[in-house]
Image (cartoon, rainbow, N blue to C red; front, side):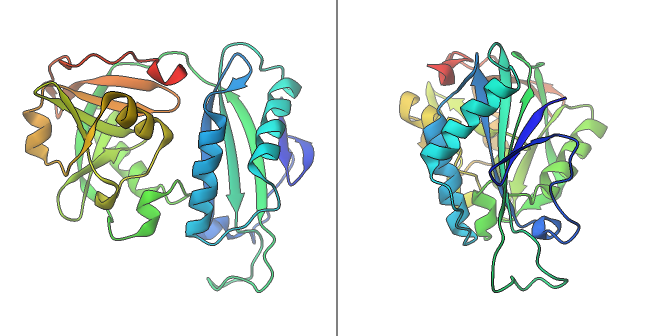
Length: 267
């Protein structure tokens, strides 16, 4: 049994924290995920910067600053005795209670919740499938932020599993590659890294940004053909770091010709 932090209070994980009237039911929620290693948040300040930038997109303003949230997260780890090994920290900001329609209430009561869970230190090989039954909407500002609207990703992942994969790659409405269900995507071509631009409907993740900075990855719209003819594909996120794609649509992919340490994001 673990402890949560909710609106300044320490509570048991089994206690109810959101009412049936919370606007999370409308997808009005921004959240962040941070890897915790041996009791410390990896790149905590960068993740909080990202969270606050994403909150601005849907006009959320919370009564806590970034430093307070990071300090509280560290206390949460200690309260749960998660001071060794790999853990996943989540922070959720929901719209709070707000009537029956979609119109926001005049007075907001945003709900801020934190939790920490154990997570693996390694993940299985990636067998990716390019999803065909759902597209990301690159015209929506929500495509570039981490919010509760993960329905497209869930549908895509379900399709991937039905087709023998364990990860989905999503296209946008223009038919360009965007990302995986829970990871940024990079390809290797002629010794260089390329990744889709944010304008194609890609979330601006911390690990994505770190990979771009450290390996001089270039932003470029990518097609299905670009993936098939690449010298390797990487998927990257904060929890699993960077991992190569072993197969794509059932076809074996080459080991990426540009080597990246899977734990590069821990440095």
